[in-house]
Length: 60
Image 1 (spheres, one colour):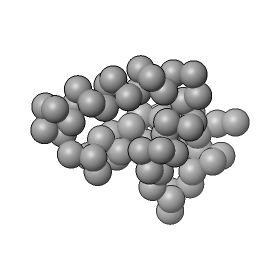
Image 2 (cartoon, rainbow, N blue to C red):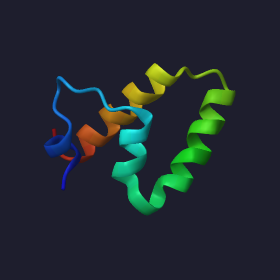
Image 3 (cartoon, rainbow, N blue to C red):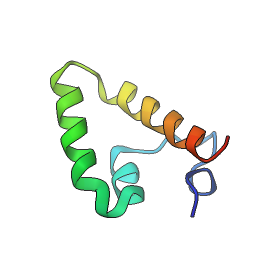
Image 4 (cartoon, rainbow, N blue to C red):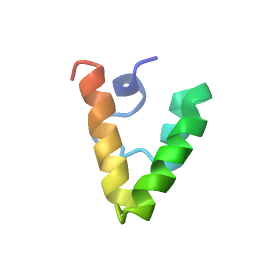
């Protein structure tokens, strides 16, 4: 199922939503988020960047 079919513009996904969507790749996601947070990227910014990237990947 595509990202845009699960999350519409009115639903901002949580960190856990993103992890579940990624399935087997969630360990890589965990490493990436830990690194970005250590570099002072806030969780809301991280979620926004990820959601935008996934929406763009699905052709939106």
